[in-house]
Length: 209
Image 1 (cartoon, rainbow, N blue to C red):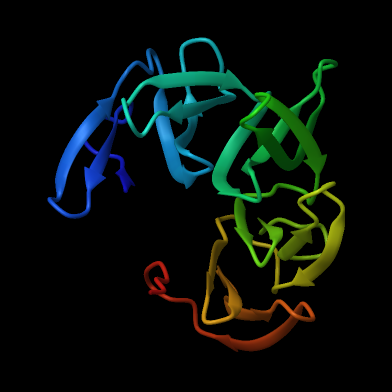
Image 2 (cartoon, one colour):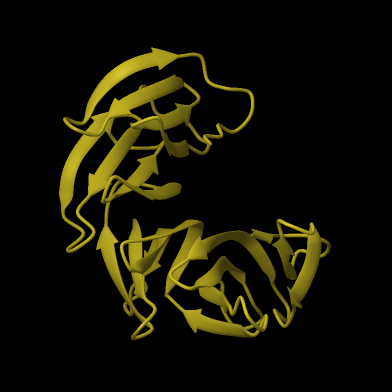
């Protein structure tokens, strides 16, 4: 189990049996860790360091050793699944262009492939063998995009209300995909990408056993 504690540039791994923090990760000089995820044999983080605003951090769960990679993506959120690490945000081209989308980082090769999607995507989740990207500022309104993880191609784009400036909480549980937005809580049926129900947005994050 991983958790950010103390300073914004440290991460500690917490033993859920003893509730003791160990292998505190340091070494993010001149930057910070914005968010973390666990999977694909390691802990992962996004944020910035002294050299770039587009790093991806890898934490070795056995030793706490820190590695850093440059994804060329200014990241807003991170997820793991399907053998990859997924980061969503703004991709920066060599010509200085900036495009919203999701990056697929391959831990075996340290290579990142970028797939444009949405206008200003904020959130990413891997669930139901797909990549889900939340785009609150979509051109046609707030939109939840479902992508094929093998090639980044769109499977479905699901409208979830009006455009808004903020984040979209994405959760998987009880056989559904849940999108918490400023417009409400949307329950998505992954079998056909339809909205199975709607409700008031939760005041806190959703948790499923």
